[in-house]
Amino acid sequence: MTNFVKNAWYVAGWSTEIDDELRRFTILGDNVVMFRKSDGAVAALEDRCPHRLLPLSKGKRIGDTVQCGYHGLTFDCSGACVRVPGQTNLPKSAYVTSYPIVEKHGIVWIWMGDPEKADEAQVFDMPEFSDPAWAAHHGDALHLKSNYLNVAENLVDPAHVSFVHPTTLGNAASENVPVHVQTEGEAIVAWRWIRDAEPIGFFKAFGGFSGNVDRWHYYYLYTPCTAVIDFGSTETEKKCAEEDRGEGVRIFALHFMTPVTETYTIDRWMHLRNTATDDAEAAERMDTMFRKAFDEDKEILEAVQEEEMRPQTRRPIRIAIDKGPLVYRKRINELLELERTEDLAADPSPAFVYHD
Image 1 (cartoon, one colour):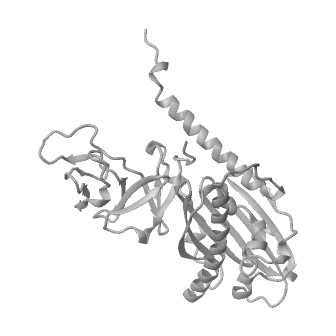
Image 2: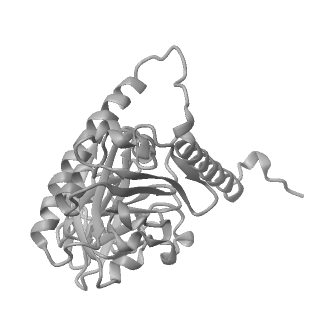
């Protein structure tokens, strides 16, 4: 049984990944062909002809339609078949699924579930994207041989940075600092402050700090697959309050996780910053440090995935820092159960249909 929540917006790719050519993407285990129509908007169709099942991405575009490369069946951007060579009637079953798309801030979002439930207002956004005091910069796509649940849990876990990222995003000063977790809002939030401590490598490079700092890490995880890490630093003598984080050097690291299969996830990451906002070179240097840190995550997560696939004689233990991940798993399971229940109600088995 699949562990993918269908009724949600997922990142299909950066805007730069999709052009006039037919491009194949795999999302939630399903293959999708995407391309830009003549008006520049993105079209997304099931990448499988309903005739002999050849991927439509192996066919060709004819205007804003896609022609199958096997027998020429042609489909418009709604998924409807508009041509079957050699016959005039179009079978009702000759169609492919069309997926809702929203494109904003250079990001293409796709809805893989019930299209009637696709609400564009639910697409993730932040006011900093449009704030001239902030700079937005797209990073990379990190390919991980890991289940998306483990990737997401890593992004609501501030405690790991002390040990996995000791030269970039963490250091020994935070090893014994407790993690606080809030689970009542839209996002699961895990956070902690490290007061009067040596700056981490990232802010040694970009904060210009010469002495000890107060630093924070706030991890926001939005179900199912979007994470925002708010981290920053300020001089210790300023005694920065929680609500005054904007007065320090502050970074938002955004992670958009796309489950490809049960054991393969793409994490597209970017950042928003309130420092060096006009410095493109600084953005590239930040990317270099982020890549180092995220490669460290990749090594950990892929090793965990390998062990999860081996026979296990006992269940993994849980400790205090696991509250955020546990709540996340609970929310995912609730959404999966809701979708399964709705599917049963919408399409009852004939055994449960009564006739007078």
